[in-house]
Amino acid sequence: MFSKHCLDATFGQFVTILKWVAWKRDVFVSEVDKNFTSQICPNCGFYTGKKTLDVREHSCRRCGYKTHTDVAL
Ligand SMILES: [Zn+2]
Image (cartoon, rainbow, N blue to C red; front, side, top):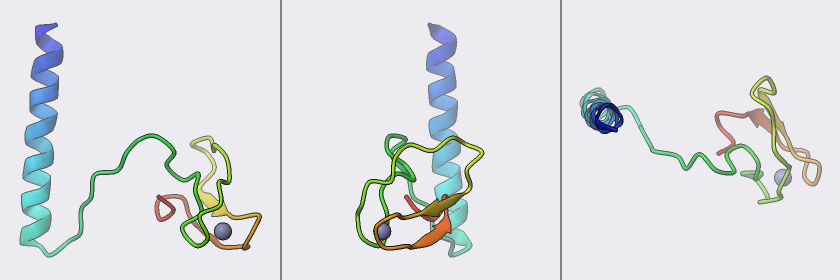
């Protein structure tokens, strides 16, 4: 229990430092909700379904938009 709290606090400090370094270097950083990532097409909003981690390309059946899964939030 205590170690989980320490881990959460450490990760929170890491995110704070990461945001500061990104701001200092003029790099965009955003926290992303872990649910439904890479499942909704960023071009048309169509739900494309759950992907496994080995699938690295987002491909929309409705509009044909293709991009890397890191881009398709
Ligand atoms: Zn689409």
